[in-house]
Picture 1: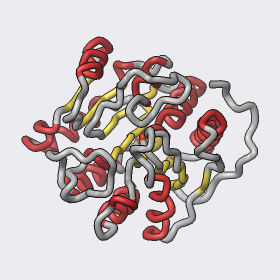
Picture 2 (picture 1 turned 30 degrees about the vertical axis):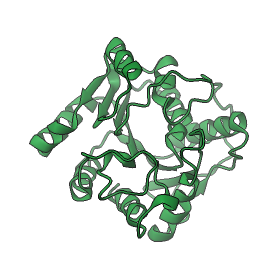
Picture 3 (picture 1 turned 90 degrees about the vertical axis):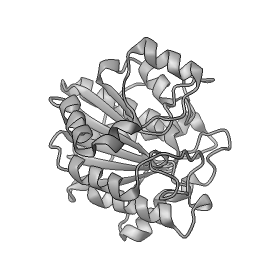
Length: 267
């Protein structure tokens, strides 16, 4: 993607900026995720900055998200992006990658997800929510700086790709054995790098986060994950997070939306 030449956006103020990025590119599997930022902002009683785009025009939407993200990453100390489905993470992390490259920093991407999202893209320019990470890797993001946590439903194509690229993973059983040891591993992995956290809500067990399109049993409890977020929020190298795949249309008693708000509050 071409770097923006100038800024038309004014930032400043709060320590953490919240940005609504309701992109949905999940082949109709993730319809409803576009409503998450609005519902979460109501609970937080905060006005989110918005990237103005049309979901039906993926080329323009992806470009606008990338440009907005690149600008705000250069202007703000910390940013929270609220999706949308996981396809939004492609232009967001690509902007993060270019921001780091432009500023001489080492990018680090840590992903909490029940799925690796490394299927081969049908359209490399607009990866879906099942393809975005592979698209980013194909664009040159350094694989040694990627940590995938909690993936427990992997396609054989994804298993082969992750093995070929040498992507480091932490399995869910490691969390269950010792949460604090795993947190120390995360901090050690990201040390000396600029950190981006990508949080797919299906990382959490569906008993605590039912409002998502692809629930997978065997995740952390909401209490365990909020503790993890509290620890990670204190990491000085944390630059940005994204929170994706919350679907208010599939939620039960707003349980998942409320959890999403609590996760953002931790940061």
